[in-house]
Amino acid sequence: MIRLNLALMLAVMVSAFYLVHTQYESRRLYTSLDRANALSRRLDSEHEQLRVLKREQAASARVQQLATSKLAMRPVSPGITQYVTVSGQTAPSVAPAQEVQR
Image (cartoon, rainbow, N blue to C red):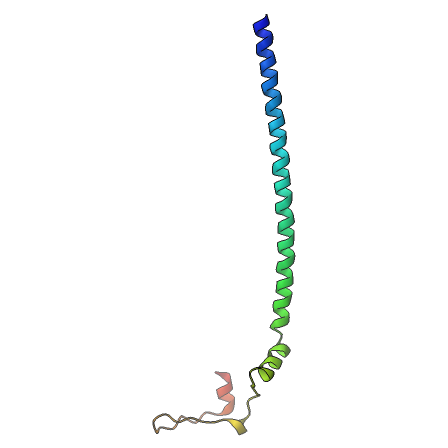
């Protein structure tokens, strides 16, 4: 009878330790999942902010302003078009409208 009681007490102790360990692992995994979800939300927020910033940077008015101020570009006009010849040959005559379409 004593052996049976000791065996049952040992089984209860092992079961209790296993239960505590399982609960600890469950809490640890839940905390890890919560951190991962928070990181996911933060990264989604940053991604959306970057998409908005990208749209702002690519706006045609901003590109036009940067082209004129930093790159010293100006709009195309037939009055300032220069034709370049290569080794004495003249380039084929191209109308300015066709040149813009390329």
